Amino acid sequence: MIDITLQNFEADLIHASMQQPVLLDIWAPWCGPCKSLGPVLEKLEVAYGGRFVLAKLNSDEQPEIAGQLSQAFGVRSIPFCVMFSQGQPVDGFVGAIPESDIRSFLDKHVPTEDALEAEADLEEAEAMLAQGADPLSALDKLQEAVAIDPANDAARLDYLKLLLEMAQHEPQRAQQARLAFDPVAAKTLSDTRFAAVEQWLKAAEAYPQARGEAELRAAFEANRRDFDARYALAQRKMVESEPTQAMDELLEILMRDKAWNDSLARKTYVAILELMSKPLPKAAPEAAAGKGALEIAGPATVAPSDPVVDQYRRKLSMVLF
Image (cartoon, rainbow, N blue to C red; front, side, top):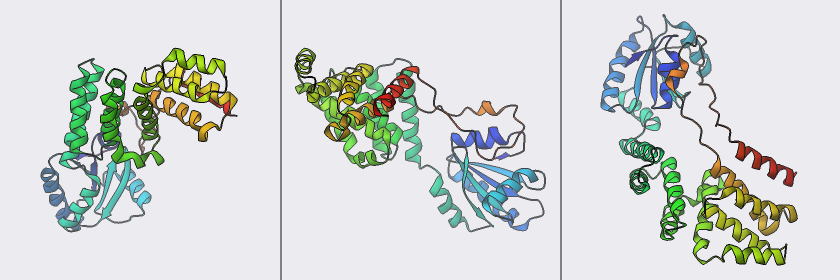
């Protein structure tokens, strides 16, 4: 349990909630219901074994923070509890409600033990890959994370990508990737990350039976409108970890026929850009040090720029528009 003030608001509440949920209990010494709610919340923090952090804010001593949160949620009484997650206030409740209701509230926002275990496996696998360790060890960790928590999209995406990186020299990895992808195939309709991985997976599945590069080049050099051959070469380049060469071939198709094969060249080009794009950086708590202004919502996180990705985005824009 921590006490929140203007000085530690960003570091211990906003930025801390990027790592795990933080439940803020807004109370006052004169409030009778606050005195009965407080011990219940403290007991639950222990019972949940570190799956959330309990923070307390004395509204008499910190009226600015209490006032902004009360205004944001349209609440004028205490005790008032606000759940912070990923740097944002996401939900809350008012009054000394029963413990069973508090547990129901927490279970909507607090990760399960399985989810935490899967997240630990994911972080370990990412550290292994960053340090250049054996990718098979990282693959085992990611497979375990997906098995423990099938809803962990980050773990599943990392698992799929690592399998597909191996598929050029180990074709059976594409079959493993298909088994891991099919349960979440519907996500391609709403999540560009899964849509991108699907294009890579299709390329990896086609790779073992695909014509060689020389034969493909001869085909479309003989017939500039042999888009099937040029697209097959782009797929080869995806599997062979040559994304810019793949996009160069796709641009050749787009310059001649933007709508070819239900816009398949454009969709694949966009998929490659998505696969090349760096993920959003995780917020660092120390970044809040020294700030004096109160921010109820955390600062926006911006993905780092990649000059190659930016260049190929411009190329696509010039062809399409």
